[in-house]
Image 1 (cartoon, helix red, strand yellow):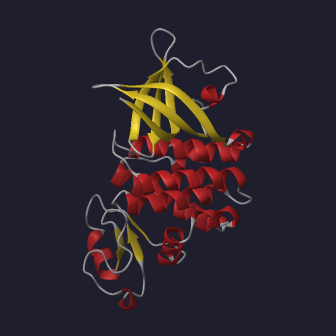
Image 2: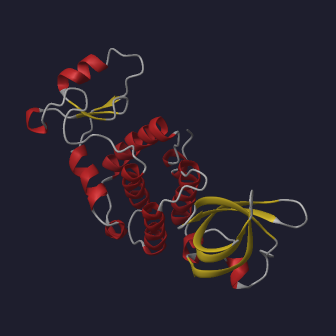
Image 3: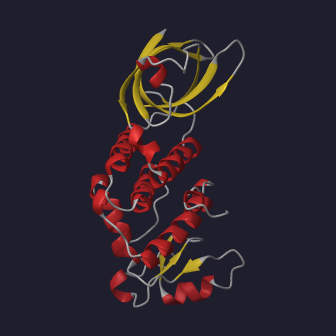
Length: 252
């Protein structure tokens, strides 16, 4: 059966007989691995469609146990990403993140559209691309079903109006009140942050605004560092993924 789908290349590797195995994030079929004999070094639209940071349409033969790319045509190449080290680092972390959080053949059209919006935004961003990456990851948490509880204390349910000091518990998965924070600190695996900024306001801003908003948004350096530390720990615990430290050139 021949299928046609839009997709983004996540990674590739050489295999036998001058073929390559391409891992694609597709709109209709989710993440799939497909072999191809298309020569990546040619200047055709098909060759361009095998390269990173390119949005393309693929004609794929779907067999009983494998996929094979028959032809491809690039729709848009975000080549400017590779011309700037900060954009390249952020986009590389974005690709790695998608590769790790996506399951095989699990369609996620909302996440696919968000991924395209990220590529478009990072290629033209005039501000910190790190903030753009952070916003993208925050938005994926709800799509992936692991969004933190930010409307009340995640442990006792106390209203935000009754919580004077708002801490964020990675281990519990959301905002905690003072009493719950003190109790949780006795646990050996507790991980609680008391940010210097309003974490609820920042999280909700990231979660609610269109990704294109962050093309021109810069957080203060100290706030950005705290946001990234919390988000790195959170994605590591709930998704088994931490690309944020790598995107800043830090060791995990």
